[in-house]
Length: 291
Image (cartoon, rainbow, N blue to C red; front, side, top):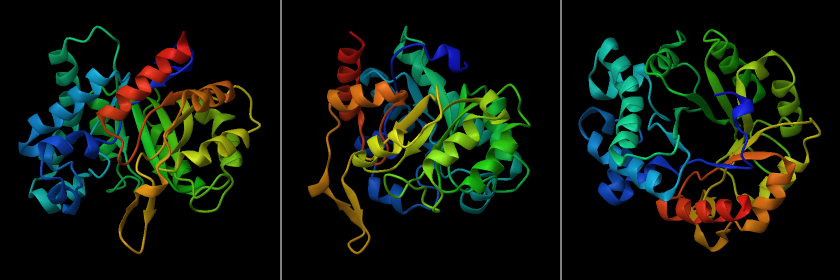
């Protein structure tokens, strides 16, 4: 897949992997585990498959692997696996997505995004990326990246896999700036206007309140950008109470999608606290938008 294949007005990404498996597992135990769900790949793959299937039925065009917190080092430390076993377990995440697609017998062309969280290559030897690429993932999804420096490191690693396409999604603290403090618009210009562009199919932001999406997208003056964004579905995180403030939930509307589509939004989905029910609602909105 390359940017020319993004020919619809908008594609639908799935929701949070954690929200996806919530109906099938003791979610508190998952949230407390240092691997934050990726440990389920070892001996609870049916749970992960159920979550993927729900998103497929909801109408997602892209499935995300449950590898946001996965790494060779993490699997060795917390699952007592050796290097080769850890490597294969990351590959298994792609196979599980593929199995869910096959078992649902879905005729739509559902693509698989390999989730890479904001920690860089844990062992600094590209192990995690090698595993996802070897497994045949369609797109690498660099998620919640807080700074230009980390994005540069990740995309330089990506260049070692010249045939692999990717999306780059930043963590933003407001309607103008990345979490580290750089301007979102400058970051987009930097990565969409040079050699990195050869492998990027979309660039954007995730894990933020939807109210920040419009100002962030409108701040970008770079032309012909394919944007990806997937905001939180559960209000704003209350640091003091260590939970989401659900009084500030914002429901994305078709009017929002129309505005974002006009600015260049191509891939939209959900991050924290976005489940299959919400993805199905977004599917309906996007379908109406495409009429």
